[in-house]
Length: 277
Image (cartoon, rainbow, N blue to C red):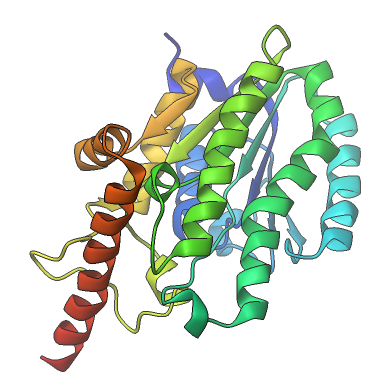
């Protein structure tokens, strides 16, 4: 079984979306630590830190805009053509959530979430897949443990991640027998900027909270590269998240939804109580 370092030696171009912060940034740092000369292309609105400058190409892109995705894909296809022989690694990482009752949330933000979390993943992958089929490689999509069950108070976010989870697994079967495979990564609550973008002033990280983040983005990044090297098609990070995914599939979906609603309501209450201390 190859190590992540050995796997990356066979990769000529690495493309990641949303590498300016969170899990995406940690994945870039982990790759640079293992393969300092790797050519990494980042697609996001803002550039990662100074560490990215060496062997890094930043393509400023609003991934929720289909025209911007198409323009970025055109640049990437040129980069791939001009790169040395080797596989292409595409990591669709960009995404955000929005916490609250659906009737209380901003409609425009919800639609932007669908554009970013779902449409951009399919769109960018479709643009790059022809060259990936020639060279070989892997499509890695960052989903979420939320994709395994309905998620009240994160209804649209959870639904987008359910799409990413199922679409990636199905795509992997479509690609069976080709030189391209897929990996879908399902982290649980992670110490990153997710909670801030989802509407929390501070993340629910106090001891005993229902959804206390049990992993850092660096840990998720390391596990992702390990799963990639091992040829896995699905990674659920952490034993607690594996239990959630397992039990979520064993109980009636209505029961799972009600339990999820209770937990996510408590998440908001715990955060408010933490802010008042």
